[in-house]
Image (cartoon, rainbow, N blue to C red; front, side, top):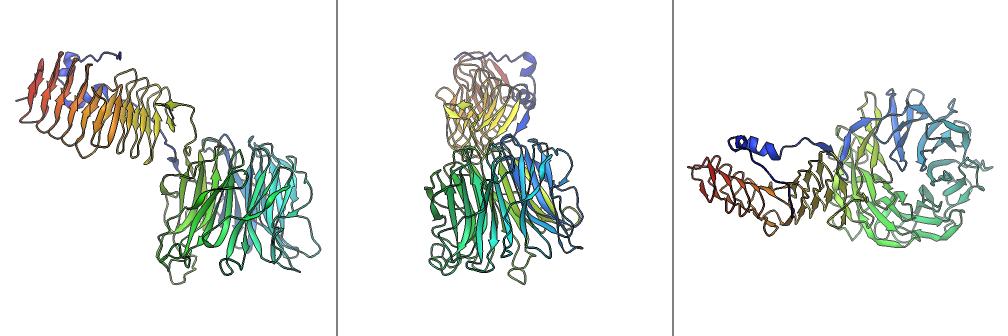
Length: 628
């Protein structure tokens, strides 16, 4: 293959190791995040810090713009006061000031807000409103993408003669702005004591029929804690918990019901959980085709599937667009808590991108047990995991919050079409007065970039400039495009393509494929054990079984390496350890580094520099430097 010539001027031949490396390898870079990497640090959402800001919810449009809503609580008034919100663009920059969502607030409390957004960035906020006289109601307010109210605040539920309470609302918007609201309704004069109800609206806020019951198959068991998700065509799924006395001795189970875009049921209610008892707090997310995933909190204390463990953990189940299970239940949080660790993991949230990749976030108790097992003074943190559309875990569980003092809890998560995501939560005593709302942004969850590397879809792609592209602990496909790039695969079986520019490729552990490009590219090995590298055959052993193509230069490890070039001009750097460097053909530069090295230039006009070793040897070298 033709390659640009590497010319080693006389001045370079007399320089130190650092200058020799810098002349070909040290390049200015801009850092790009790998899928799942943090983008910036955690940030405070609320501007108002007096009293408490709690119970956040977040929604993100296809372009990555997002809205956060939360409850502003005044303890002096002994009630929930108002619903506030803050808009952000896709770069995480605030768009205008924090604003109040609800219009009516005198002598009433507003709490338990939720938000949903359509493809254009228009959004709807729902919440519970109550006063000391009338039953609680579900209220809603529509906004355009600039945060301007569209019409007035309105009541979602229909007033009832039995004075039923309405609370625990959830909302979902389809691409054109039509939306569905679900909530829990009390049943003062009958059984069950609670019912899950829904109502549909068009994109101008006009109700499409009256409210309707979700669980029509069960008329005796209490139902509550609903969530709803909708696809691009307006088909939607509602999930909720139902108290049952059939399978698990009076515990709660998670159910779901599918609907088409006209609000017609598709089949009947179906059981979501299959093996774990006492399910609660279900949350649902759906991709553009109608495939969906449901996550929930479940008790494992007396389940024979998990002997010796206790407390609560997070589980998930995938379904296709017609409600057929895709694989088994997924144990999202580690089921490794001792039996006495009640409420170990709870308060989950799930979000899914257009292709079906998804993220689950939840609260985990991280302190030792206080005096009371249900004390609110547990230290808590927010954790998350990423999954691809087949349900395969992408990377390890990670802590979302950076600040770990006291409590970080009740997360919500939202994704855009490319898999970029944001997690919000409430944090105690971090904003200066009780609870505040905080958030963290992340790079894409691994959707297609439209760029291939060795025939594979790239999961991380650079720019036309100089980029530093860092992969994950999983299997990455990284493409550098233009510029002088640094590609780092970390663990996993990675595929790295430098493409144009003078690139450095470091596969890390695993069986990696390193493909340089049209310029003078370098394979870098950084492990503590030595490597065997042969550019003439394109193989490398030591950090895995690696394949090298279009690579002209090699930098070894801190141990004893055996590195052989090819018929082109090669720069071979041994680094530390007693290295063996063989140039073969071409005009090569062999740099032994520290320790005692064996340098063999081979054919061509070669430079052999032993550098630091007291017993270096050189042969077939036209220029010999720092060799005794």
